[in-house]
Length: 173
Image 1 (cartoon, helix red, strand yellow):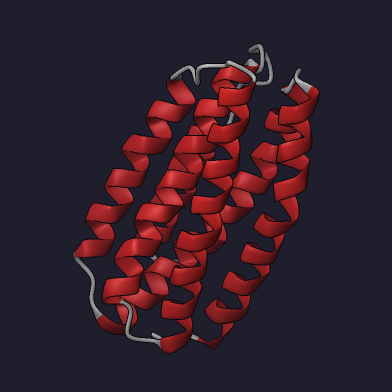
Image 2: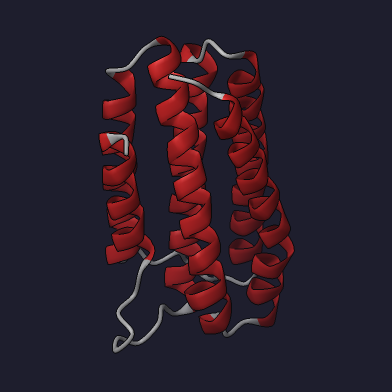
């Protein structure tokens, strides 16, 4: 298995996981997690738009930037409306730190190796985000509008995961 992918799995899993014994995040923490998670994917997509060689990878990266920017706008608009200030927390900070580490590693790759590592990371990342949505974020959201937003954007993450898996299957290193 690709070393970057293994690192990515560990980083995303630790960033998005909450201990089964720990209390789940509150709405302000969920807001910060959502914004951080989307920004991580926006940053990776922006890098891939400039570095990817494969046309499908470039198109996918553009879609990630567009879609995740839209989700972040919706999240920020909602928390502003609700007068909730996103509360930085261990998970949001870890997401940002791990995202920066992933970007650094991806910047060291070129060509097919970059394309494969980026797409492998996207598969892992979107699966981890879906797991976090299903097991932590949606169940812990107390505000009905926040919960509704999380439920509303979930199908886009499923579509992104499916799209990334499709591209992953076509890439050969």
